[in-house]
Amino acid sequence: MQAEYLRCPICQGSLAEQGKSLVCERNHSFDVARQGYVNLLPPQMKHSKNPGDTRDMVAARRAFLKLGHYEPIGEKVAELTAPLVGERPNVLDAGCGEGYYLGILRQHIPRGDFIGVDISKDAVRYGAGQDKATRWITASAAHLPIADETMDLVTSMFALTVPEEFCRVLKPGGYFLEVTAGRGHLLGLKRLIYPVLTEKAEKPPRDYPGFRLETAETLEFDFALHSSEEIGWLLTMTPHYWRISKEGAERAAAARELSDRAQIEYRLYQKD
Image (cartoon, rainbow, N blue to C red; front, top):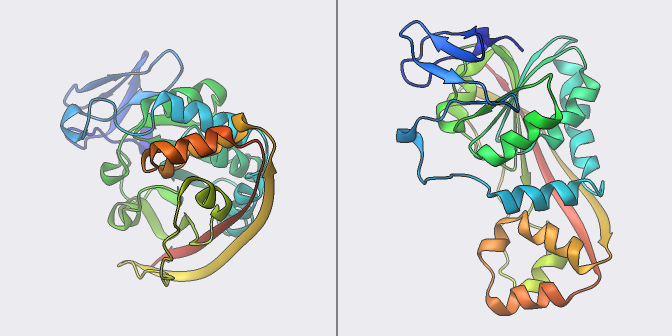
């Protein structure tokens, strides 16, 4: 992945590689870390000292995803997008985490140029250590350090959706895939950790300015976990980890088996 697609987060000037740094025309310089990623998240764009997923959350997600239960989610991404973008597309995963789904997509588009962006430095650091062919960037999806109209595909996997930024970086006719959890996602885990479940209203696909909705699909599949450790990994990688009570956490820690069902919503948009 060349630096030609990247822009300085401070002045929006073009970035060029100079040794082990990326430097813009105004001499704003950003060092490439030993693992291979670059931090393009200025302090003024942070909402905390270490924004995004913590090291424990990244480790838990990594351990859970290695079990393979969520592989169908990534395969569905490839099924929906790979036939549309040609052999050598520029692909941006906005909110990439440690790059699990990006890695699956790369298997289906081996000649593509990939950029993984996440606000969590710990997630990006791990991704960079595993995949040297992708350009890994610590940045916010709300302020993408990407040049205008340079991407063929943007994916947002359970992450912040910023349609105006995605529209800006996509080429005319480019695609944006939004992947979110359905209202029936992980009901088994929710019944374990919450005393009462709140029924959520079904939300129709949103209309985003500059895009038209091409496809809306739902993927559902069952899976089972067979230890308290596996259940803990799943819980820690979800937002429920921060919401549950002490009693809910204790029930999760005591559980040894969990049968659950994934429900994933896919919405594919094309830039007008």
